[in-house]
Length: 223
Image 1 (cartoon, rainbow, N blue to C red):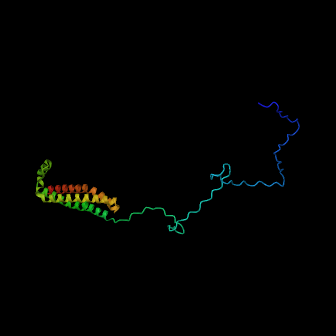
Image 2 (image 1 turned 90 degrees about the horizontal axis):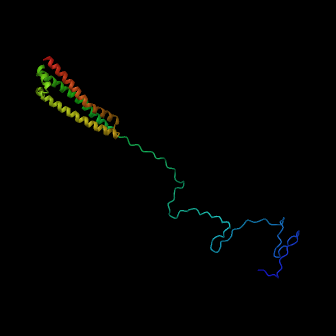
Image 3 (image 1 turned 120 degrees about the horizontal axis):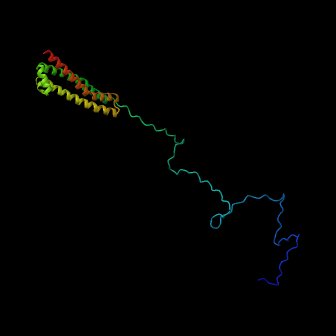
């Protein structure tokens, strides 16, 4: 509650300016003599070591350049040169002896032993045809009787040995040719050895059969 004895303030009459307060200082009029505003300075850190909020933050000084400790390894003066791109090293060229040996074995089994077998087949056919007549030969062949080979059993034994030798050399040439192709030690001769070794058995038996049949027919016809 207010004191009834206290007078309420009377408003000033209209058209008059209110009086300035007693503690107000007259503001300096801007003019030519007024000094330009200076840049705000940085506030010193507060009691706790942190800067006062609202004040600009001073720039962070750049860290000093790294220096190698004493005794450390120093790089070359001109720096390290750019390394050349990696290139796969080529395998040193090896000899083609492995493939050549395989080709030699294949030729030996297919050509040389085929000729030997053909010679033996001719002699066997001639010996069988000269030791029997045509009627007996037909009966023996139809019955599968191998007794007709009795007069030439020695030649038959040599023909079998030749056949097994050709088979062994052909398998050897085939395996060695495959190894030569895989190891790049005479790929061309190795491929040729494989082809000849595969065809060798067919050539051997075909030539031997035709030679035996021709010799047998010629011997029976002349007797």
